[in-house]
Length: 175
Image 1 (tube, rainbow, N blue to C red):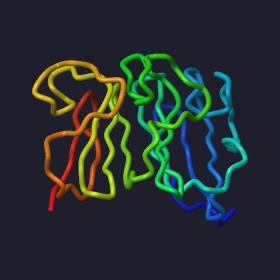
Image 2 (image 1 turned 90 degrees about the horizontal axis):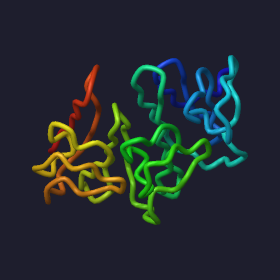
Image 3 (image 1 turned 90 degrees about the vertical axis):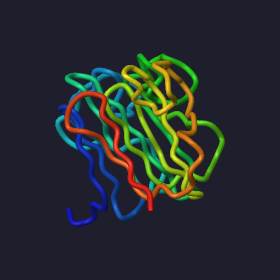
Image 4 (image 1 turned 180 degrees about the vertical axis):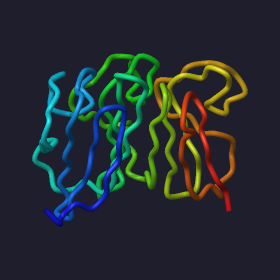
């Protein structure tokens, strides 16, 4: 196929969007990271739901667990997979094997899951983080876990986010 738009790899799994706005996943599914409503692994791409409004997808990982964050064309943020430290941002610490919306806002621009924590940028240039606060990784000046997004500082000049190669490093660049 030549209709793949964006792809992201996790630990033993991948997720991708196509030019028609559909979302697909494949590989290890032990924590529901393939978004199929189960913990089954698939060796070929399977569509995540029937929607055609997915804009971007980002897969995070650590060993045999995984988290997927995705943004729809309306700016809504969705998450699924492993959630032991609240890294899905849905206010719980329960794994989700199907996409769940992160809050009700539709102002998300970028997302990046990592090892037990996630971060995202809003269209207003603010930076948000959630999940494990171990070693201060959420930028809150503490080591508290947050199961819902919390703003990192008060700046509105963040332009891109990413993650370190191993462990809980979080990266962000401001203008």
